[in-house]
Amino acid sequence: MVVGGGARTDLDLAAVRAFVAAAEERQFSLAAVVLGISQQAVSKRIAKLEAQLGVALFDRVPAGIVATAAGARLLPHARALLAVAETAVAAVGEMPRPLRVAVQGERQGATEQMRFYLDRNPGADTEIVISNVFVTSRDMVVHGRADAAFARPSGGPRPLPADIAAVPAYVDPAHLLVGRDHPLAGRSAVPLAELGTYTVWIPGAGVASEWADFYRELSEFCGVTVDTTPRDRTRFPGPDGIEAMLARIAASDTLATVSSDHFRNPWHPHIRRVPIVDPTPAYPHALLWSTANTHPGLPHLIEHFRTTYNRDIAAGCWLPVADRERFAG
Image 1 (cartoon, rainbow, N blue to C red):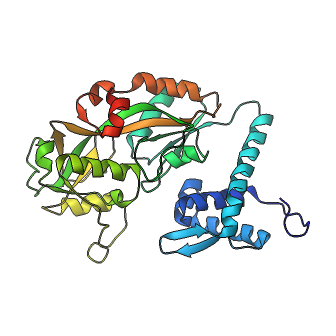
Image 2: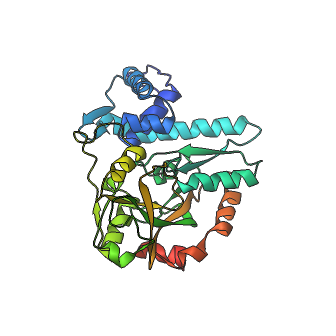
Image 3: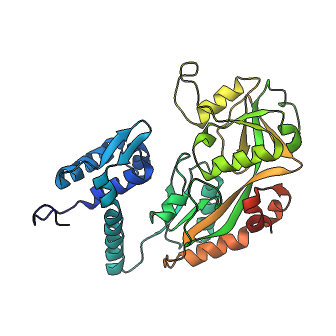
């Protein structure tokens, strides 16, 4: 890239990759998770890039960071530069790069689904890319950082682009998690209609996302109140995460949350699992990919999930209207 009166600047691809990740995630900490490096390393790489270009690429805002005008102009070129670099590397190699498949988090059922696939296809050159609970894995496919991803194909603050295809991968039936002193703790099940008299605490649903829309639609259907209030750090200090959330629920006689059969929760002696029935809500997970993606490993992965999808379970579950035809039709 040539900048400033003919002077030539050799850009560091690692710095460019850090810039793109930060621009898309809008937080250095989340960019660090995506890249698998420290937040300090992300900041240093971006600072190096800003020094090379002689401009600021980000402004700080209360919610994180946003690209400056210069950063916004750079972003499409930076993405193109990374794509060209990957294509160049693949062109000289004897084998294509590994197939990258994004999952929302290591506790998600999609991770176990991929392990099942890889155990039965030991020759598949595949990498599992871990996102996190506050960043949708859909963006990993949309922005070309993954070849495929597990996510709900409907809802969310932005519709999927027309070139993103989806095949149902699995539906995940829901249940309640309550403390041992909660009124529902001794129940063998709770009907969905009765759930409308209770409040469930789901802090993650406060993020504009396809999963937040799922819980909003569930609330509209059965009347359950969804509390998205973040944990009060003044009353409940300590680290964030599912362990802290379950510890608070375990100690309460009023709090409850919705989990799912395929999500791997940490064990707690005072947590009780209560199935939701008549019908059971189920979260729809699809395998997403770009129709322009020509990776040779992609068709086999798509066919695997096309044939292993648990449609028999979906038929008896509650699903949002936007997902019903695809997942239960």
